[in-house]
Image (cartoon, rainbow, N blue to C red; front, side, top):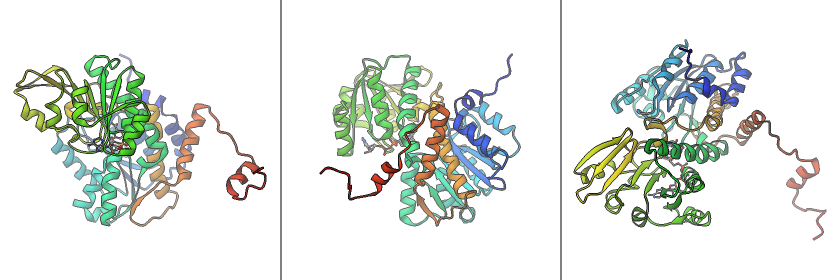
Length: 412
Ligand code: NAI
């Protein structure tokens, strides 16, 4: 049997993380710090954890979703001294909770989070630990929403960078990563075409617009539902059909939620859906599809294929739910999360958040912060370098033109 390392392929396709390991492997700027890392524990996350460790950090890691952990990745990481797992494959929701509390009792200096579970728990249940945390970073939209609420209430005990809100994160990870990986996993789980189908995408934010554009690129007829009138208009002008959820429930065949909100598809919508509809979620938490209502409507459930739960309704219709309504691109039986190339820059931004506060001397008061633009540009430049692409350098006259308001050379 050839030797296998579950991180090899991810390492091969994350050149920005490789450049960080090369740059900081010797100087070890994170040495002496303990960094907690919560994310979906699959191969790319493994490489991100290796990168923090290579830069000198002791790393404690836990999942950000109980069902997305890959056991071989956990085992490979645990083989390193200075990396400790609070995770295993097949955790229950209660074990997930307990493991996160265990991690926090090890008193991390910095918390890199995905969904704000660790950061919320440290504030709610371990205030003495929170008081000594230097800072944090948050990777996803759902986590930013929670952090905004914490910031608003003035309860944050340390500064947190909103990594999700950087252009280098949401323009690539949310749009292209979620777009491709959600559809890939729908196609693999159902072994059915996306092409030619009526696909309803709920939410036209960064993730939803990526899913809708890519579904159309695959030949689907796309329908978008939105709560924000500007996003609804954008979806219309991008060429998608826009309707409310009642109408979309009747018109769609495949439904994908990506809103960061709850009960987006609920009882009244299940009642309108056609026989054979396929329903799944790409939002962070498993609350976007009201699964309890579907269970209550059904006479029985069966499993026609791994990863698919079929709800048999009394009127004879059968509705198919993928991955139990959890993140379809991360928790289905074949799910591997986003393509490595986008996680390369997402995790480089997370590394940068930790580096900036721990090693570069940035000292901030407690609160939620935008990552400085110069750090975002630096990761973009690293990525372009790895792709062998260059940007246009501005001449002095061009730079000056941006900075002046009188425009003396204009002819009008
Ligand atoms: P976003 O804030 O850019 O977009 C969400 C959109 O949903 C907004 O335009 C909002 O108006 C709309 N919306 C809210 N309630 C709605 C409803 N009831 N019906 C229709 N539209 C509604 O957020 P983004 O970045 O697109 O993230 C969406 C979710 O996806 C979040 O939970 C985020 O954490 C998650 N996410 C998942 C990833 C994955 O790997 N599957 C990757 C990145 C983010």
